[in-house]
Length: 304
Image 1 (cartoon, rainbow, N blue to C red):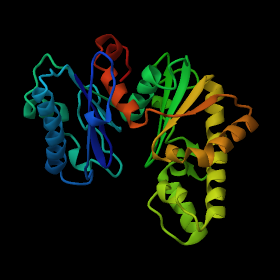
Image 2: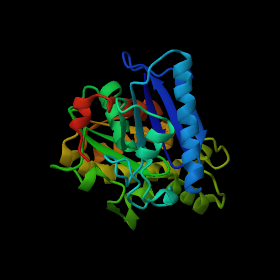
Image 3: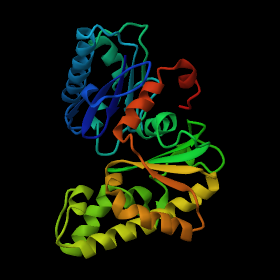
Image 4: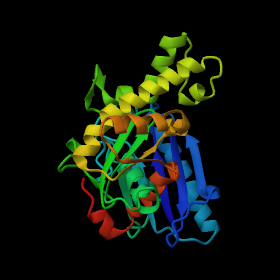
């Protein structure tokens, strides 16, 4: 069994993944909330607790651990497993900490068990290319829309950090757009801001917006503006990269029926005919992408 791990700004999810069929039954998932603004010891203790719980369940079922792969947001030294850079609004207490060394020591991992780290948005793209909507795409873009705007440019299933049509480090969140950067327009913060401006009501995220019944005209207008902005932003990159397909995940993708048709129409208006898909794997794509890192040939082909 492989343990695939998804660490975000507010959670850790661990999945037991069969190394033969790579399926993830819901019963194999363990998830808990984590406060990424907490002190270092508190964050690490929570991570270790859930990882140990997953390893114990393997031992109870007489399954062996074949690898441990962790997907988490950047900036991070993924090759060394070190919080080498200051993150924005999360994990600031972990700056400079070698989390790879701590996990090996506290879980008493054997040297023969690979422990690998990679970017969560990239793992999402790897998972979708391997087992999801991008399986047949030569060149594709995978994006996650949630608390932030993640993106991965893929060529034959491999994340691209440079090359023709690829932005620096393969990232789109920091690209200038309108009066700011893309992350400010394609994340939950934008919806919260727009709804507050239209109604005077503060919502917690897109989930509140799609269950709104009292202000549907505002809701429709907000999603129309979002779709138009996303199409205007994405189309030059999709055409420049000559992408066959885009898959969209993250919490905002759960509002698919509220924006997908408009997004497709707006992309066509921009002269872009790239196919757009909603992720069916969802969070499991990140976990599967992490599991793919156990393969030495695949792992050694990645860029860091």
